[in-house]
Length: 222
Image (tube, rainbow, N blue to C red):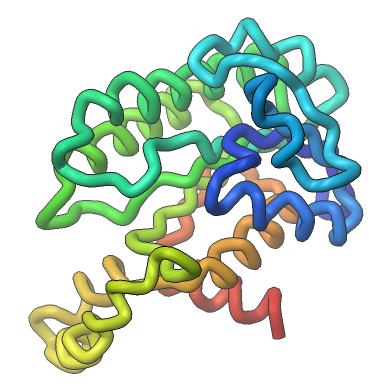
């Protein structure tokens, strides 16, 4: 049901998580976040810290009691083709562990930040995210899969130079669909979308692509 929820967040000190948690709190949600001991101080105030290892779901499964929503944000920062093994060791393993313990805890809603695909580049990265999506479907969890491509914001601004090329690609019929699916988003649009999703649990598996992320995020901040 829509309304206030008890939300467990992994990756809460990362680029998206550190910005999302205060917004979730402003929406009235109780937020618990998984952290390493040395990162506790990085969490926003009033957020309950849960020490554990994202690669070992058993280290934090006890904290899921009483929660109804799980938001999985763990991932390798600044993805690149050179980080293929890290995608397997961190993104895939943490994602599968999160799905497993969320299923075992019978949580009402699982939120996963995936990536837009198919895509012409970053094959290893998209493959790992697709594997997690398959595991989500197999788990029978009520889930929302959010598929951004590149998120613009502080420290992530170089793709602004690509905007003219996106405008041209979206104007051409043969490239329009790909340009929209692989479009650029702002960090505000991502945060707004994830906050909206947290308050509106899915029934079955809901997939949100770039155009809908953009729309939801802008509506949330309007």
